[in-house]
Length: 263
Image (cartoon, rainbow, N blue to C red; front, side, top):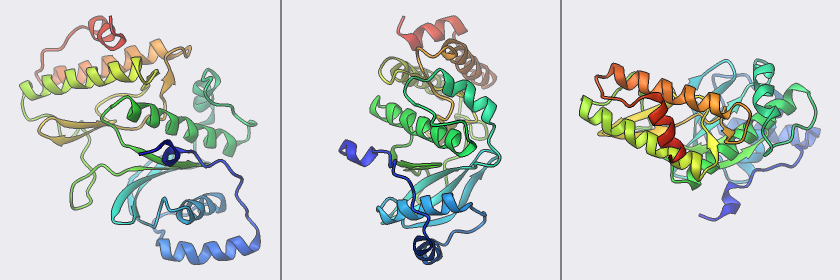
């Protein structure tokens, strides 16, 4: 797959009456349900549809205070569509992460600009993880507050369950999964150049038989970010705590952090 497929779409959105009129028909075709979108989000979905990244939405698989994740359709494939809410996002928390991230530039302090930059960061993090070979969703497109990415689920269109609610089948499998995750984190850190920032059993999907996927890279930061070390230790501590509860022999935090860093 060439890099053009991953390119973020950065043009301003035309909100002229003619565009809005066209949008209404497009949204009818998209079957947007279960959520009230502001006009900027609607236009963003329209533009992503027009550019071939999205053909339809089929309801939400996850809802939250700051973002919803919808099950989308593109051709014969399902995609995940993450839509950040502008009105209810925690801007002060976002700003702490944005301020030390040299990869992005916030164009003003208005709410929608901060949220757009936050989504841009997550897209960059997903792209870095994918290129480093991490078990994570493949990113397809980003525009404003919307990210389109690979849908991770079964043949029936159901998303894989969270590791929290569907842990490995036995302690031996759990130990193998733990070390595979730490190996992935090593690649994320050394090749991707980022710290996940919010890794726990709530941000890992488990498909069974040792197959897992790391998700939600919204809080990921570069390894030289002022908060990187703190977040890395927290991520590793969360992992070890969860797997210890599964009856797994786990390393100490210091050893696991050293493994991630390549020491």
